[in-house]
Length: 126
Image (cartoon, rainbow, N blue to C red; front, top):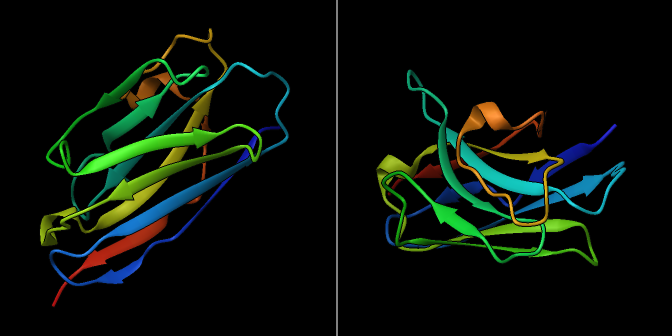
């Protein structure tokens, strides 16, 4: 069973940066897309970014677009989300998700993912 564990969340001041990491284990295929999602209190879970298995397809969504960068290191089975110029409205629980799909596939639709991590809290506040 594919398992995902996020880390790197925390409290940061407005304008600061964080790098989230997600470690995947229990993989049964080399072709899997990874996504980052976030959910703020009282709001729906929204797609932040995704990256295809070969890294050739990347998408961003939501209000964090332009301030986040996704990357993956398949040698370590990890995906990263670099977040810069953080704002209070970025406060949310951030989730990593995975789906076994063709090497070119990438989606920020949460319905496309079968495997989810437990989430890591990001709080942006002064």
